[in-house]
Each structure stands twice: as structure tokens, then as C-alpha cells.
Length: 284
Image (cartoon, rainbow, N blue to C red; front, side):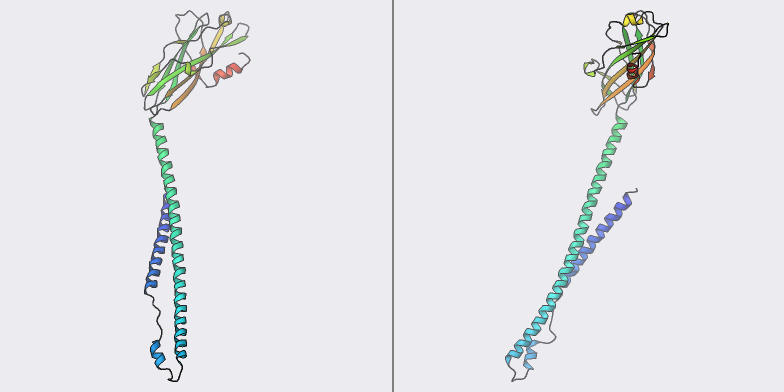
């Protein structure tokens, strides 16, 4: 509403300028068509009243002087009409330029409003997928398996969800020393075999996904009194508009190395850079 009133005033000014120019041009044309300069007396009557002995040259000179005066008056009037026409044309041109600029601004505002409305509509209608929970279990041999639950809180389905993860283990021993190790490579979603669709306002829990065993993990866990794990989940999905969105989440918690048939341990949410912080710390 703040911009509507100035635009209305500018449009009114442009219309008034063009109306004034058109009225001025019509008036000038009317005057130019109806103005006929006339002499004060008839030339033939003047010549008859001259003395009979006067030469014909006097009559001719008189006619020439009157004609010159009329031509001068006509030229002056024509000049005034030309100046008025120029002013009217200039005013009309200014009005057209102003109207053209206002039209461009109006089109730009309408385009921006349409773009914002489309973006807002997409934001309201698209899918929003987050990592809701992560459960993990760690065997005595160092085999890590995780299950991830994804939640779609958007108004439309999420399509072709892909996900992978890697992890970092920290083992603490009785003398308060600690050692850390990375499990798995940096997640590359192009190597993911998951292509899962999640309906709107629904959740999906993945099948257990294990990381490849690495040398040294079993030795790391041996005699450890406390084992903590940080898991980084990387996922992406497509919304109904074909746009791809990426989601990264970290979860961490304490796990107890046990046999393969042990139950999963629920991890709690951590900040997105938790795993990176672990790998940069001296314990890593």
C-alpha cells in the first residue's frame, strides 16, 4: 500500500500532461485553420480614390506594402502556432516517456510479486525431511550398524531419498587416556543404493546399514571402560518440483560393545559439525 499511492499519483500526472498536450494541439489546429488575415480596406477601392494623375506605380506600391504587412502578420502568427505546436508535442512526448517508465516499473513490480508468490507457494508445498533419530550398535569386533528414522513434515511427498553415514569412535581407558578412530569414508550419495519415497507428514525407518570393518577397531575397544560414538548422516531428496535438497545431521552417545544380536542404542542429537570437531581434536 505504501507504493500504490505514489504510482497512482504519477499515472494521474502523466495522463493530465498528455490530456493538456492533446487539448493544446487541437486548439492550435483550430486557430490555424480559421485564422485568415484581412486588410483594413479593399485594395481596388483604394486605387480608385487615388488622384487620377497619380501613376499606376503608386497603386502597385500601396498594394505591395499592404501585402507585405499581411505576409508579416501571417508569418508571425504561423511562428506562434509552430511554437505552440512544439510545446504541445514536447508535453505529449514527456507524458509518453513518463507513462512508458511507469509501465516498466509496474511490469517489474508485477514480475517480482509473481516470483515471490511462486517461491512462497513452493516453500509452503514442498517436502521438509529431517533426521528424526539414529540408533546404533557396536560389536566387540568393531562392526558398527545403524538405523536412521527420517521425518517428512512438509505438505507433499519427498522423493528418491538417499542417505549414507560415517562415524567416529572414542575409547576411554582406566587411566583416563583416550584414543579415537574414524569409521567409514566420507559419505558419497552417488554410491548410495537407497531410493525411498516418504509421504507427507510421515516417517520412515531405514533398514540396518553397517560400515565395513577396519583394522585396529577391535584392539581399540579392548580394555576400554567407556566408548562414545558420533555418527554423521548425509541425505538428499527431491521435492515435487524436482528440486534437490540436502540434509546433514549428527548424533552421538555412549555404546557398549557386545555381541552381534545385541539391541540398538538410541543416540541423542548433536550439532551438525560434531563429527568434524571430533576428528580435529587431539583424541582423534
